[in-house]
Image 1: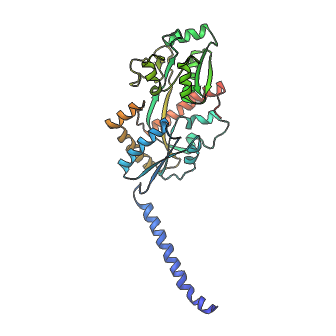
Image 2: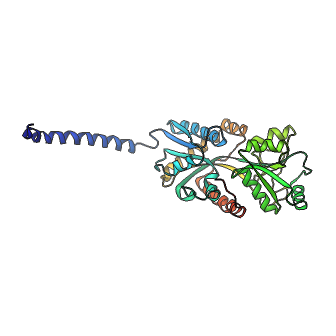
Image 3: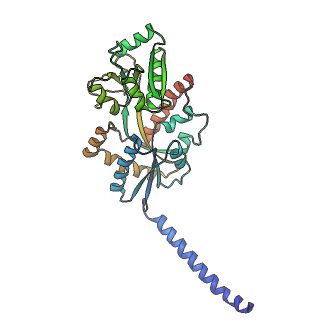
Amino acid sequence: MNIKSGVKNWPQKISAFTAVFVAAWCVMQSAHSQPYPNRVLRIVTAETGGGGDFVARVVAQGLIENLGQQVIVENRAGVQSIEAVSRAQPDGYTLLLHGSSIWLMPFLRTSVAWEPLRDFAPITIPASSPNILVVHPILAVNSIKELVAYGKAKPGELNYGALSGGSAHLAAELFKAMAEIQIMHIPYKGNGPALNAVMGGEVQMMFPNAASATVHVKAGRLRALAVTSPKPSILAPGLPTVAAAGLPGYEAISMHGMLAPARTPPAIITRLNEAIAHYIATPEVTKRLLLAGLEVVGSSPEELTKSMKAEMTRLGKIIRDAGLRAE
């Protein structure tokens, strides 16, 4: 080996390496200096087929149309979707679409790998859905007041079906606490089986979402008493709210929250919020969501933060007092 020759070539090799490094750095700087967004966005959500998956795909189409970039919906089961986004770069390219379990799960599990208000930047509530309090037709009650009176007169005789830790479960426990009556929870592996159990007479009542309950109410397989939203819902025409029908202050709705990792720049949060709100407010998309049992919300980031804090305070207490778990 000719050592002198090698030494002589070092300046050329270093120069070539420097040129490659500088070129790569320039490309990276150019990409970062381009207006947001300049590459594919990813929305992480729960498993395929659920309400969150549907809303995520609607939102994805809105971002595609308003931001001009490809958007991929990535389905992850359980809490994996939440954990993945909590660890993602806060650059606006990895987003989360999830139900209220993201801010209530810390109360339902012994430990989680995220803190809702610390690890996420709220963007918007694209859509929400109320639950409907339904009973089996054989149960001799026709109103909220009659149901509460029945529960007080016959303590321990009422029961309800629900997936542990889900919106129907929490809505029922809130009702139970505010009405000060004893209602036994019969757990099921999903709200579908729980709804079938009510119709089959295995349990007496339930708080399913409006989309799944309405068809059975119309067919006479269930009797609807009230809707859980703070105001009457277009998804349950003619039904009073639980609050107005006898339990003032009651409210339980299923919200779909859109969030980014904490420390995502405010300008990006605003851009995403505006793109989503503009899209879901169009008549075609609003109608599509209504047909799926969802009401358009399009909240501001601040309103989502306020809703998260309110639910964590109100339902967090219910979860703790009742010792609820969803391991």
